[in-house]
Amino acid sequence: MKQYTGRTLDEVLNSISTEQGCRVDDITYNILEEEKGGIFGLHKSITIEAFTSKDVKEFIFDYLGAYFTELNQGVSIEIIVDKENEEDALYRVILDAENNAIIIGKNGQTLRAISTVLKAAVNATFKKRINVIVDVNHYKEDRYKKVKAIARREAINVAKTHVDCELDPMPNDERKVIHQYLQDFKNVSTVSIGEGNKRHLCIKYTPEKKEEKEA
Image (cartoon, rainbow, N blue to C red; front, side, top):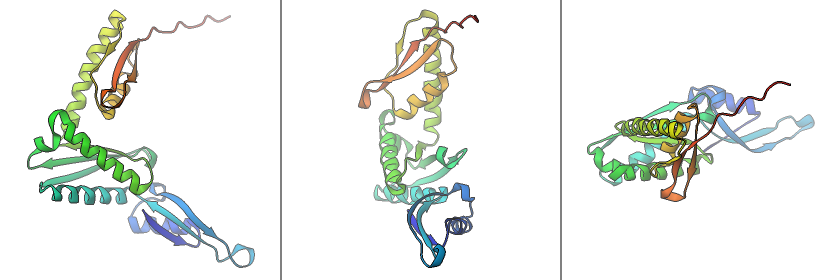
Protein backbone atom coordinates (compact mmCIF):
# COMPACT_ATOMS: atom_id res chain seq x y z
CA MET A 1 0.00 0.00 0.00
CA LYS A 2 1.38 3.41 -0.99
CA GLN A 3 2.04 6.27 1.41
CA TYR A 4 1.21 9.90 0.66
CA THR A 5 2.08 13.11 2.51
CA GLY A 6 0.61 16.59 2.23
CA ARG A 7 -0.45 19.59 4.25
CA THR A 8 -4.05 18.51 4.73
CA LEU A 9 -6.09 15.34 4.25
CA ASP A 10 -8.19 16.97 1.52
CA GLU A 11 -5.05 18.00 -0.34
CA VAL A 12 -3.66 14.45 -0.23
CA LEU A 13 -6.93 12.82 -1.27
CA ASN A 14 -7.44 15.26 -4.15
CA SER A 15 -3.88 14.58 -5.30
CA ILE A 16 -4.52 10.81 -5.31
CA SER A 17 -7.83 11.35 -7.10
CA THR A 18 -6.10 13.30 -9.86
CA GLU A 19 -3.24 10.80 -10.12
CA GLN A 20 -5.48 7.74 -10.24
CA GLY A 21 -8.33 9.28 -12.22
CA CYS A 22 -10.92 8.32 -9.62
CA ARG A 23 -13.33 9.94 -7.20
CA VAL A 24 -12.20 10.88 -3.72
CA ASP A 25 -14.96 8.60 -2.37
CA ASP A 26 -13.26 5.62 -4.08
CA ILE A 27 -10.06 6.01 -2.03
CA THR A 28 -9.54 3.77 1.00
CA TYR A 29 -7.04 5.20 3.47
CA ASN A 30 -5.60 5.11 6.98
CA ILE A 31 -3.97 8.10 8.68
CA LEU A 32 -0.42 7.17 9.74
CA GLU A 33 0.85 10.46 11.10
CA GLU A 34 -0.43 13.99 11.59
CA GLU A 35 1.92 16.76 12.65
CA LYS A 36 1.25 20.35 13.62
CA GLY A 37 3.83 23.10 13.78
CA GLY A 38 4.17 26.82 14.02
CA ILE A 39 1.74 29.31 15.47
CA PHE A 40 -1.92 28.22 15.57
CA GLY A 41 -0.98 24.82 14.13
CA LEU A 42 0.05 26.17 10.75
CA HIS A 43 2.49 24.37 8.46
CA LYS A 44 1.15 21.00 9.58
CA SER A 45 1.46 17.85 7.51
CA ILE A 46 -0.37 14.55 7.29
CA THR A 47 0.77 11.13 6.06
CA ILE A 48 -1.65 8.42 5.01
CA GLU A 49 -1.50 5.03 3.37
CA ALA A 50 -4.11 4.61 0.68
CA PHE A 51 -5.26 2.55 -2.25
CA THR A 52 -7.92 2.54 -4.96
CA SER A 53 -9.55 -0.20 -7.02
CA LYS A 54 -6.91 0.50 -9.68
CA ASP A 55 -4.17 -0.43 -7.20
CA VAL A 56 -5.96 -3.65 -6.28
CA LYS A 57 -6.43 -4.61 -9.94
CA GLU A 58 -2.77 -3.94 -10.73
CA PHE A 59 -1.68 -6.07 -7.77
CA ILE A 60 -3.91 -8.96 -8.88
CA PHE A 61 -2.61 -8.77 -12.46
CA ASP A 62 1.01 -8.76 -11.31
CA TYR A 63 0.53 -11.49 -8.69
CA LEU A 64 -1.30 -13.91 -10.97
CA GLY A 65 0.98 -13.07 -13.89
CA ALA A 66 4.04 -14.08 -11.86
CA TYR A 67 2.21 -17.13 -10.46
CA PHE A 68 1.30 -18.58 -13.85
CA THR A 69 4.63 -17.64 -15.41
CA GLU A 70 6.30 -19.72 -12.70
CA LEU A 71 3.99 -22.61 -13.64
CA ASN A 72 4.72 -22.04 -17.34
CA GLN A 73 1.00 -21.61 -18.01
CA GLY A 74 -0.30 -19.12 -20.57
CA VAL A 75 -3.31 -17.37 -19.02
CA SER A 76 -5.33 -14.28 -19.93
CA ILE A 77 -6.65 -12.29 -16.99
CA GLU A 78 -9.76 -10.09 -16.87
CA ILE A 79 -10.83 -8.26 -13.73
CA ILE A 80 -14.33 -6.86 -13.31
CA VAL A 81 -15.11 -4.70 -10.27
CA ASP A 82 -18.71 -4.88 -9.08
CA LYS A 83 -19.51 -2.38 -6.37
CA GLU A 84 -22.02 0.00 -4.86
CA ASN A 85 -19.25 1.53 -2.79
CA GLU A 86 -15.64 0.65 -1.95
CA GLU A 87 -16.67 -1.29 1.18
CA ASP A 88 -18.85 -3.64 -0.90
CA ALA A 89 -16.53 -3.94 -3.90
CA LEU A 90 -16.25 -7.40 -5.42
CA TYR A 91 -13.28 -8.17 -7.68
CA ARG A 92 -14.26 -10.89 -10.14
CA VAL A 93 -11.10 -12.34 -11.67
CA ILE A 94 -11.81 -14.28 -14.86
CA LEU A 95 -9.03 -16.51 -16.18
CA ASP A 96 -8.81 -18.19 -19.57
CA ALA A 97 -5.90 -20.62 -19.95
CA GLU A 98 -4.43 -22.89 -22.58
CA ASN A 99 -5.74 -25.78 -20.48
CA ASN A 100 -8.59 -24.61 -18.26
CA ALA A 101 -9.17 -28.10 -16.85
CA ILE A 102 -5.75 -28.05 -15.15
CA ILE A 103 -6.47 -24.73 -13.43
CA ILE A 104 -9.97 -25.81 -12.36
CA GLY A 105 -8.83 -29.20 -11.04
CA LYS A 106 -11.02 -32.04 -9.80
CA ASN A 107 -14.33 -30.63 -8.55
CA GLY A 108 -12.82 -27.14 -8.70
CA GLN A 109 -10.24 -27.87 -5.98
CA THR A 110 -7.28 -26.24 -7.77
CA LEU A 111 -9.35 -23.16 -8.58
CA ARG A 112 -10.38 -22.84 -4.92
CA ALA A 113 -6.73 -23.13 -3.85
CA ILE A 114 -5.71 -20.36 -6.28
CA SER A 115 -8.56 -18.20 -5.02
CA THR A 116 -7.58 -18.77 -1.38
CA VAL A 117 -3.93 -17.88 -1.98
CA LEU A 118 -4.82 -14.78 -4.00
CA LYS A 119 -7.30 -13.48 -1.40
CA ALA A 120 -4.75 -13.96 1.37
CA ALA A 121 -2.12 -12.02 -0.62
CA VAL A 122 -4.56 -9.18 -1.46
CA ASN A 123 -5.79 -8.86 2.13
CA ALA A 124 -2.24 -8.88 3.53
CA THR A 125 -1.02 -6.28 1.03
CA PHE A 126 -3.90 -3.83 1.51
CA LYS A 127 -4.46 -4.63 5.20
CA LYS A 128 -8.17 -5.03 4.64
CA ARG A 129 -10.61 -7.79 3.84
CA ILE A 130 -11.31 -7.47 0.12
CA ASN A 131 -13.85 -9.61 -1.71
CA VAL A 132 -12.17 -11.55 -4.53
CA ILE A 133 -13.64 -14.37 -6.62
CA VAL A 134 -11.54 -16.25 -9.17
CA ASP A 135 -13.28 -17.89 -12.11
CA VAL A 136 -12.00 -19.83 -15.12
CA ASN A 137 -13.82 -19.27 -18.39
CA HIS A 138 -17.03 -18.65 -16.40
CA TYR A 139 -16.83 -22.06 -14.65
CA LYS A 140 -18.00 -20.44 -11.41
CA GLU A 141 -21.00 -18.82 -13.08
CA ASP A 142 -22.12 -22.22 -14.34
CA ARG A 143 -21.43 -23.75 -10.94
CA TYR A 144 -23.55 -21.09 -9.21
CA LYS A 145 -26.45 -21.87 -11.55
CA LYS A 146 -26.18 -25.56 -10.65
CA VAL A 147 -26.08 -25.03 -6.88
CA LYS A 148 -29.02 -22.62 -7.14
CA ALA A 149 -31.02 -25.28 -9.00
CA ILE A 150 -30.16 -27.88 -6.36
CA ALA A 151 -31.02 -25.47 -3.55
CA ARG A 152 -34.35 -24.54 -5.13
CA ARG A 153 -35.35 -28.20 -5.57
CA GLU A 154 -34.45 -29.08 -1.99
CA ALA A 155 -36.03 -25.92 -0.54
CA ILE A 156 -39.35 -26.70 -2.23
CA ASN A 157 -39.18 -30.22 -0.83
CA VAL A 158 -38.36 -28.97 2.69
CA ALA A 159 -41.25 -26.49 2.62
CA LYS A 160 -43.59 -29.27 1.47
CA THR A 161 -42.47 -32.10 3.78
CA HIS A 162 -41.26 -30.03 6.79
CA VAL A 163 -38.11 -32.22 6.82
CA ASP A 164 -34.75 -30.44 6.95
CA CYS A 165 -32.13 -31.19 4.28
CA GLU A 166 -28.33 -31.14 4.51
CA LEU A 167 -26.45 -30.40 1.29
CA ASP A 168 -23.02 -31.73 0.35
CA PRO A 169 -19.96 -29.79 1.56
CA MET A 170 -19.13 -26.78 -0.58
CA PRO A 171 -16.84 -23.72 -0.46
CA ASN A 172 -17.83 -20.47 1.24
CA ASP A 173 -18.73 -18.59 -1.95
CA GLU A 174 -21.19 -21.28 -3.04
CA ARG A 175 -22.79 -21.42 0.40
CA LYS A 176 -23.14 -17.63 0.29
CA VAL A 177 -24.86 -17.83 -3.11
CA ILE A 178 -27.42 -20.27 -1.70
CA HIS A 179 -27.92 -18.22 1.49
CA GLN A 180 -28.76 -15.17 -0.62
CA TYR A 181 -30.82 -17.11 -3.16
CA LEU A 182 -33.09 -18.74 -0.55
CA GLN A 183 -33.47 -15.80 1.82
CA ASP A 184 -36.83 -14.82 0.31
CA PHE A 185 -38.21 -18.36 0.05
CA LYS A 186 -41.19 -18.96 2.34
CA ASN A 187 -40.96 -21.48 5.17
CA VAL A 188 -37.23 -22.20 4.80
CA SER A 189 -34.02 -20.85 6.26
CA THR A 190 -30.37 -21.80 5.79
CA VAL A 191 -27.51 -22.33 8.20
CA SER A 192 -23.89 -23.42 7.70
CA ILE A 193 -22.72 -26.33 9.84
CA GLY A 194 -19.53 -28.37 10.12
CA GLU A 195 -15.89 -27.33 10.03
CA GLY A 196 -13.19 -26.98 7.37
CA ASN A 197 -13.75 -28.86 4.12
CA LYS A 198 -16.77 -30.60 5.68
CA ARG A 199 -18.68 -27.33 6.18
CA HIS A 200 -22.02 -27.47 4.43
CA LEU A 201 -25.50 -25.97 4.37
CA CYS A 202 -28.62 -27.18 6.06
CA ILE A 203 -31.96 -26.05 4.63
CA LYS A 204 -34.36 -25.93 7.55
CA TYR A 205 -38.14 -25.80 7.67
CA THR A 206 -39.24 -22.53 9.27
CA PRO A 207 -42.95 -22.08 10.04
CA GLU A 208 -44.34 -18.64 9.31
CA LYS A 209 -44.90 -16.57 12.43
CA LYS A 210 -48.51 -15.80 13.13
CA GLU A 211 -49.25 -12.10 13.29
CA GLU A 212 -50.22 -10.91 16.76
CA LYS A 213 -53.80 -9.74 17.00
CA GLU A 214 -54.27 -6.08 17.79
CA ALA A 215 -55.60 -5.42 21.28
